[in-house]
Amino acid sequence: MKWSVNREALVGALQKVVGVTEQKKTTMLVLSHVLLEATADNRLRLSATDLDISLRTSIDAEVDIPGQTTVPARKFLEGVKELKQERLHCDLSESHRLSITAGMVNYVLATIPAADFPYFETINPAETHVLDSATVRRALESTVYAVPQEEDALSIPGMFWHRTAADRVRFVSSDGHRLALKEIPFPADAFFGLERGVVVPRKGILEIIRVLEKAETVSGAFHENRLILHTPDTYLSVHLLEEAFPQYELILPEAVSGGIEIPRAEFYAALRRMAVVTDVSAMHVRFLISENLLGLEAGNVELGTAYEEIPVDYQGENFAVAFNIRYVMDVVQSFSGRILRFEWVDGYRGGVFRDPEDSSVLALIMPMMV
Image 1 (cartoon, rainbow, N blue to C red):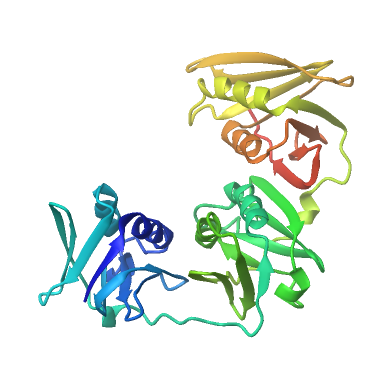
Image 2: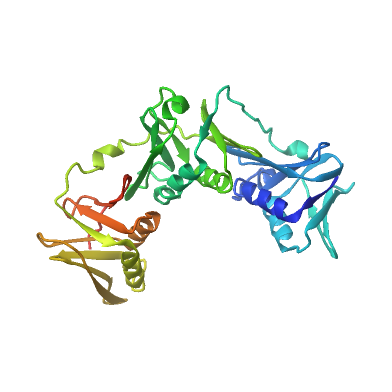
């Protein structure tokens, strides 16, 4: 096995696949490796899997001797990124070591035989559907923050792709303390058939975002228990979660008792100042709403306190509520409009955040008792 490749192209390909590789301690060391296949038609194919998510991509290469092997994905990427030469030369020795040479620099990596790599099944659904990659990516990026990072008994560790109409889908995520949703145009009926929707695991969402970052065209399909995405040079398969997503609509308020509009950039800057006096013992920020004024208050006596006022257009009863400040900052960062609208029912139900210029986006945060 002997080939050469453009360094920048190889870095890009490795960055696509490295997130899929299994980094936790496992009895299958090969799951932390990337499968390299140098083909006779001058392509280098890179594959990675953790058995639930599988990704394959390919780039141009000059292949002198076709072959295949596996190398530690992250170490391979780290080494290649440190090299400065435009062209890299790779050679698999008889002792099954992969040599990577660039100018005066040479790395030699241990390998695992390609035969030990799990069988990589490429599913080609009979019908795929063209998706707007930029729109899908922005929607996923604006809601992934509320997907639980770890499994617990109170939440589903995935994002719900909810078919709300024949041509629309709503991405919904919730960790039990907050909820985020974004609705976009999408070939929902053709994609999901009779299914209400599917639940995609958090890691799968992150890999989809990574694939869509540089993809101008993408097609996808829902096939049995998998979500399949294709770009011209990349294939991604994600096992869907079997858990049923909760009836999240039941916690969305049908009517509110008050609301204010806040300049988003000014609000976020104020939250950053409040965050200076927060830690695990004082994670909250209090909203103190009175006539034409939003007061922000954070901290405690032991740590220190901060208070700031933002003028708002409001006439109504005074209202106070506290939220986890990191949750609020996540919401504000996920929105893109100039103005953010905050609405409430009372101090016990979740506060709702909206974009006045985009009715398709919403976030809800449950209050803290402080």
